[in-house]
Image (cartoon, rainbow, N blue to C red; front, side):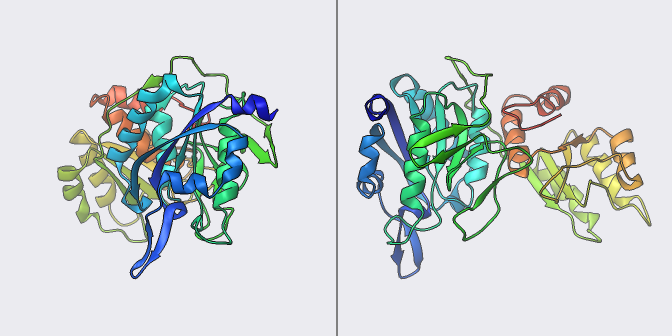
Length: 337
């Protein structure tokens, strides 16, 4: 088995994050290189043949769409040369990166694996070594494909992942979709296999970041709407429960949404609740928005997927009908209908 796995050529793309940090006078900062990470886990030599590339070395809080495009370009440039890819990344925005790559690199027969750690690999007690071993073991598996986060032995689809714990080693959850596989010791156990893959994946090289997320609190101030019109192309409204718009005493909020749409903005209604999604037409407070206006509904999509999918869509078109069509088309199981 080891001899077969050694034949796999995997490119490790390092981007920084906690896994690569060292202590400084101002707190943890990414300073370790891709070579440093590999040197800390000599067991990886028995799994596959690894090449490394240090794309950048930053805290994942600083990640934005330009970095996602750079990672996607790197994968595209090296796609024919390797059997799979492992991206080391900070945990705070890892789910956003996984979702973004799911749209930028579609139908990949080769695995694109994202991993990191809650503790630096320089520490004695850390989850970094196990996560790296699991990531490379999954990336070297013959049945692995597509974009996934591998963390704490779980293999989570890129469009369904969310960081649900800030410190624990089991930091990531698969939202309303099972983990597709697990890595158990030296084996990958597959539960769900993706069949919509191709030897020639579809790459995209454009995203538009003008997406705003508005998390409602009781009694929101509708005076923000003119600012949103001037500064954003898509507005995601995180409402309560299955979704709704405040409308008890007046229609100010509904009128604000209508004004956004009249100005050609894309409005997406979603829920703050982590599981089970939205159902906008269930209550009167959501029914009017669903029936009378052209707001989109996220249903059971994660917020990370909603945001990055909109950025990807806006990079392809500004036509409202095409935006609606693309948003409502499931990609990598982001929308389960």
